[in-house]
Length: 108
Image: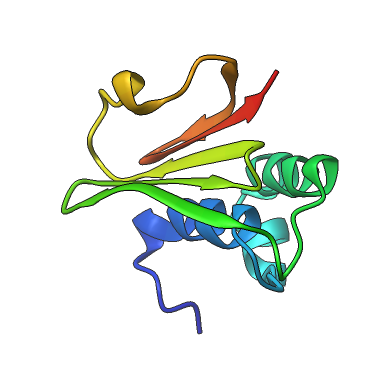
């Protein structure tokens, strides 16, 4: 069973697919829930930047409505309901994925 409420599943994937560790994708989410394209996009970002179990993680901000972290100096992920966090994103990053409650930037 997936421990995240159904409306938070993609936030969970944004976290596990951009952070250090060994992520797992549930078959049902990928094939039956219609999340294949969003999940595949996050996997592509992970692969493109070589995120590994020992990648470096730097938490930029952690509040009730915003979690913002940088991985290996190449990827930034935002999870949470706060929309405006542009002042926390360093220059040289562009949005490459986004969805309900998450966004991912990569260094250009």
